[in-house]
Amino acid sequence: MLGVAAALGGIVGAGSLAFSDDGRGRIVGAVKPVAVQAGLMRARAPQPGDAWGGCNDARAAGTAPIYEGEPGYRPEMDGDSDGIACEPIR
Image (cartoon, rainbow, N blue to C red; front, top):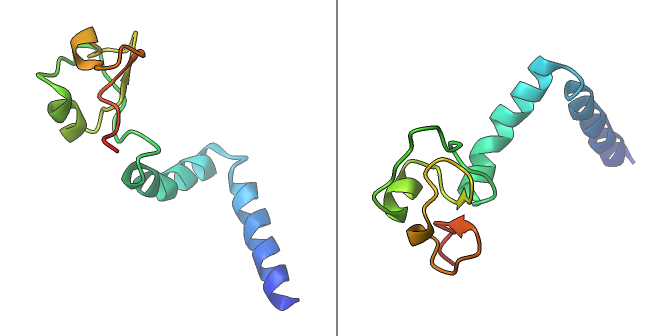
């Protein structure tokens, strides 16, 4: 019972952080490295002027995958023509 109460308290406490800009920033700062490592999130969003020599360069910069319409997207980097260049290697 005590474990359930502690877990519920943690969830409510973390949830209350999400209601402030500072709290959301703290949550993203804590979760982002894990999400990037797991391949669920990019380390860096594509920026205007991005031009990669290939997917290895885009991946090294933390910008992959690159979606059609985003800076740095080129059809030559989209091997299966699905609108997503430099997809994760599985």
